[in-house]
Amino acid sequence: MARVTCSRLSTPFKGSMENEYFEIKRYESNDLVKKRVKALFYMNNIFIGNSYRKKRVRQHFKVKKNESNVYLQTLEEAYNIVRKQLDSKYRFETIQTFHEQSLAKFLNLNQVKTIRSIWIGRRNIDLYLPDYGFAIEVNGPIHHQERKMKKDTSRDLFFNNNQIPIMEIENQDIRKRKYFLLSNLKYEKKLNLREREKRALNIYAITVATYCDWSWIENFFGYNLRGLDEI
Image (tube, rainbow, N blue to C red):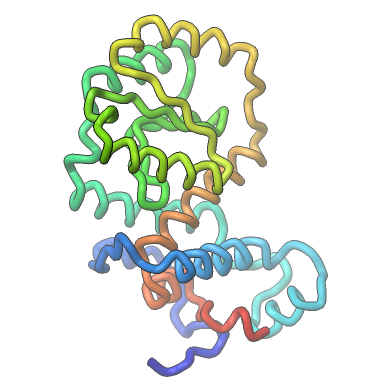
């Protein structure tokens, strides 16, 4: 593949790629994923600050200080395209159990916002609480099997590395733990708007970078991002 220079693409993102199929690469190199996450974060912040490198990048991309196609809303739109395909391809992982539904309904009735069956990178998480920035996994008997326990350890490491706290609750403990959880949340400080947006951006960028290759990302946002390291 020829080297792509870092320049503005002729056709910027216009939200027209929702129906375009892309191949889901579930276990691509972590180094490639990290590079794509880094590029998305960098372009999200390109209009902030006046460092020499940021000025050079803005000049190279031919964007003004307060302009970029990579921001929370466009990342969310890209994430939703990915999420729909993941939900379709891995339906079994997105099916919610009775206990997961029960906990989500309880929290919602008590004015705690929840997002069900959310994809974060390669993981599908039962519940995510955006106002507090942490995830909840409801564990059934299968989670005590050795193979599943290894996967859970890998999952916990992934979330720890990405600064996303995760709480685990056993099926049989839902009834008593849900009141304990609700009581603790009353004393837990909610994230402010900027913190919530930062957490959301992190989730969107990681997931998009995990499943979409450079070409898809560059066509979607309207930038050739692979040359960022050369600037």
